[in-house]
Length: 552
Image (tube, rainbow, N blue to C red; front, side):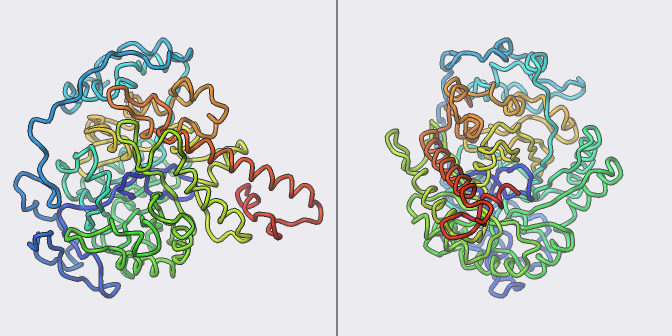
């Protein structure tokens, strides 16, 4: 996550869609920073100095940890929520921007969600419908999926499966969207996904791959912190999926990535992951200790030292290195942040806008300023004019690809249909984790591996809305000349409480100058290359080395 911090999603395998990311754990049950790369250290203590549990040797990390000390299930670093907090009131159900012609007929109240097989009701369906309708009328009361299908919007199969193998984490990052934002569903999740659950997940994934003749499915091991699992058992979920897919859909290739905070990376874990062909993505706030002051353990101690050790180890295994995710922090110098990350030799850097929305705006948000565009463009200029491609920056390369009319596999930009399913530790099927930044239960579907297939998940209004492309966008977005590139922005960034997900991105003012500046840079590079032909070569002084690399 993942990047479990008001951000976007875990780093996928190359070419796969971006998932969303989480990170951390209110029940520390493993060492946070091995003093030596394979040596455990004592268990964390809470801010009052009380140990949550005895130290656990690495050989036993796969065991289910005990319940938190707090019988009420409160996060150890968080005060109980105020009792009797009022619920949001239902506003008038006004359609804010008018209905697009292609789905105008779908904007009547949809029928109650139900199991199409009629065999098992959704988990607590009445409460779920009420919650979704109150917080997000679009899409939950304004989109009739059956009518959208009749209007020509066909479902797109799931291609990326995020397995939440752990719902707890050894860090307590103060800005984590899984643990510190609107959705507190982690409290009800088992700490560990059992072998029976990932075996059932494997069956469902194989069933879906076979039904849609998928050439590839991408797995992301996620959490919490997935590396809390012992090395010998890290690959078990992936092995189960590969075995099931090989039997049901032998032509489908399975790729796998684990998204981690990096603090538990050891030689043993890297060897186990490499043997299983599982690549590693790491979440970090920057390459210096000063950039990571909010990434701390449960006693408030910094996690950067352990993460830096893990990243240095990972850099010595480039075949296993997927890249680094970093959330934009306006308090940090952009160029310094970028160059500090280069010290860890990442093959790719994912720069993520903080998870925020119109009801919970990002830090520094102001209608007359574009601080996030300014920050990102400072990095772009440094990267673009470097002369040598030292790393990929996914955000910039995705914008360039979209400007050139090339396909991308991201859900944060463009109009590519969402194609990610999240499987929680209890076997429930959810939407992307990034939705947890919006409201309690925003990612929930009420579906489980035991009661629903992924084909049924495709008809859930939350996912169906994210596969409508331009027709799901607000009127100003549909009329914008940048819509093919921006795509309305990341779906969670469009949320407004009581209205839902049909507004322009809260980062709209930042995305426009960012895209226009990159477009101008690409156009200049193309003209320069044409003027140099046939003697000019990419990478000569004044000519960026990136356009040919991106095009390839």
